[in-house]
Every structure is written in C-alpha cells, then in structure tokens.
Length: 277
Image 1 (cartoon, rainbow, N blue to C red):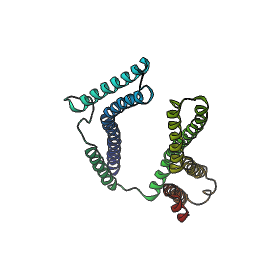
Image 2: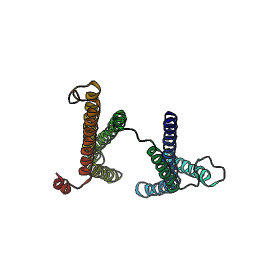
Image 3: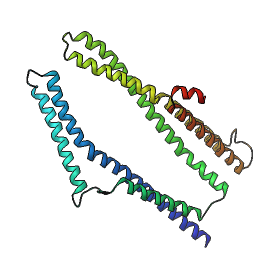
Image 4: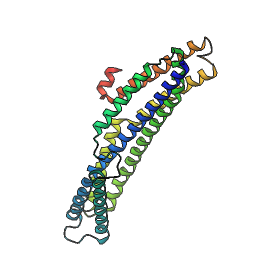
C-alpha cells in the first residue's frame, strides 16, 4: 500500500513539474509576443524617422539613391506587415497564439499556484535525509552545466565588446585619414566614437570577463568535488556514505554561496566593492 502511495505521489510530482515547465515556456512565449506586439510598430516609426534624418543629413540638396530608398521602403513594408499579422493574432477571434489576450500577470499567478501545489504534494512524502542528499548529488551535473553555459555567454559578450572596440577604434583613424570633406566622414566619426564610449562603459559596468571567470571557477570546483565523491578519493575517501554525502552537500552549498557573494560584489560600485572586500 505504501509503495503504491509513493508511486502515485511521484507521478503527481512529475505532472506538477511538467505543468510548471509548460507554464514557464508559455510565459517566455507570451513575453516575446508582447514585446513584438509593441516593438514592431515602434521599429517601423523609427525606420521612417531614420529615413527622413538620412535625407536631411546626407542628401539635403539631392535625391536619395534609388537603392537606399528601396531598402527603407522594403524595411517599412515588412515591419508594417508583421505588425498587422501580430495584431490579428492578438486581437482577432481565433488567433493562432496560445495565450492571446492573456496577461503575463495571470500566467505568473498560475505558475505560483502550481508551484505551491507541488510543494504541498511533496510534503506528503518527505524522504530521509540520506536520500535527499543522494538526490542532491544527482542534481549537481545540471548545476555545473548551467554555470558553464552562463560562463560561455559572458565570455562571448566580453569578446564581442572587445572586437567592437578594436574595429571602432581602428575605423576612427581610417575614416579620419580617408575623408577630407566634413560629410559624411563627420557623421561616421561621431557614430564610431559613440560606439567606443558605450562599449567601454558597458564593459566596465557589467564586467562580463570577471563574471565568466567566476562562473567557470565555480563550475570547475563543483565538478572536482563531484568526481572525488564518485570515485571515493580525497576528501571523500573515508567515512560512511551518509557522512560523505553530507560533507559533499555542505561543500557545494559553500561554493554556491561564494559564487553569489562574488556576483553581488560585481554588481556593486567600485567603492562598495572595496568596503565589502
């Protein structure tokens, strides 16, 4: 009887996890839909403004080249068509979006209720501490993979910023030497100088290189301890299984706490970092 109850509880928890994953995906899709619903018409308006601004800045006394005119017309027509399709999918009856007319707040509320139901169901069957520690050990590879993924993301952001700085800095010198008239060289120099300033400020503020290093370091340390526990080598070579699992969980939680502290230090201003350190 107990085994059947455990099986039913496990199946219920699995269903709750599926529902939670489905709601999380629906929230992501809905957020993307709302973003596109509002950003596409704004992008069309900005394209028209850029079109008119380019006419005033570069071709005030002459006609805009046909190729450039055609490019702007194509972009505006495409954005308008996408806007019409999105409005139809959102507001017309029978739209092809799953959550048309549903607010993000209601979806998030459903997610909170489902998570609460899962927690209440899990309380009906609380496994022993050793089993929870063993289950915790099995979740560590997923945590390591997540840390490595975030580390690769920040490393790519850092490399992208550096290449933008390289090309923009080199282009400033090239444009300065190439263009003798004030236009369009002046506009290109302004844009390149703006890019260099923005990328430099963003790299100094967000610190993607430091974030990538910290995430990679934490992932390597967690993987080292997981491998040591799996192989039964130091520092998990002695003692009973329950004691080794307890030490492993304590060590991993300490590594995660250190990682969170380093993230908080990176989010603080330079003066605040020195005070924390």
